[in-house]
Image (cartoon, rainbow, N blue to C red; front, side, top):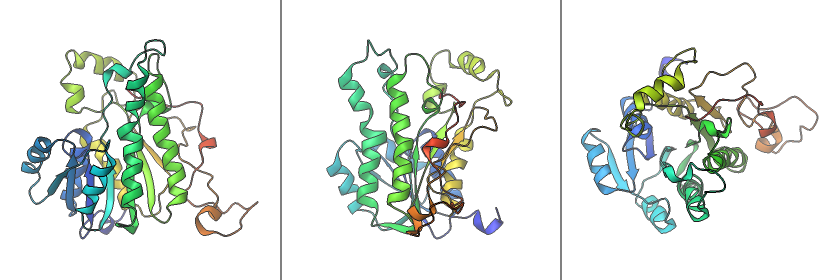
Amino acid sequence: MTEPMMSLAGKRVVVIGGTSGIGFAVALLARELGAALVIASSKASSVGSALERLPGATGDVVDLKDEASTTGFLGRLDPFDHLAITAGEFDRRVFTSTEDLDLALAREAFEVRFWGALAIIKHARHIIAPNGSVTLTSGMLAHRPSKGSPLPTAVVGAVEHLVCGLAVDLAPLRINAVCPGLTLTELITNRPGSAGRIETATAGLPLPRAASPAEAAAAYIYLMLNGYLTGQILPVGKAWTSSWTRSCRSFSAAAFSGANMKGTDLEPLGSAHPRDRSARHGRLM
């Protein structure tokens, strides 16, 4: 990537969930690269605290569970270029067996990461630059489920399939997702006994450690800066074998251009298809 590409100068970037964790790291890096920055969260106090550490940025409150709040938030925004959504931490109670799963809680788990993200994209599509981007957040459980996690696995998997569909439906607006592995956010490091669990979870990796929020944030910025990527799921975390080809990679070029290319090899570089998923994937920690 050339030096001029490593800049967001003159661009407006909106980060929903940008007050803490990976979202704050995305906001910080976007600001360092010259972007005009807007952060948002469901809590006014979190927005105020984050803005103290992001001089020059602006912030607002939005509840992704409430469509009226979503449209109100967007109505207060000027047109912008890139949107990143990192909001949507799981209630720990959804990490349980199918037998013990509270179905009301299970339905609620989709509200922010899936339905909230879809609502924002639906209502924001006319104020995002045509050559801009939206980056969602999935998770490693979509590729290596663990015992006691059927519901979170379904949520992050649904996000990735949503990316595939929206990338075709909304082109040329680019839609991608970052798939973070174990990342040293406040939520992780503040848990009692987290140091030992992190060491155990990462012991077998080529880089035997968790990612920093800044390292995860770099993936979001990359997807903003590379104007030829869409329908991509970018993993940040576990070691990946050569079989990892995660993207929505065989969207036909016709889906983007309208041309009839049936039977040809002319597929866009940034395209993908869910059938190309490898059977060997990583795991959300």
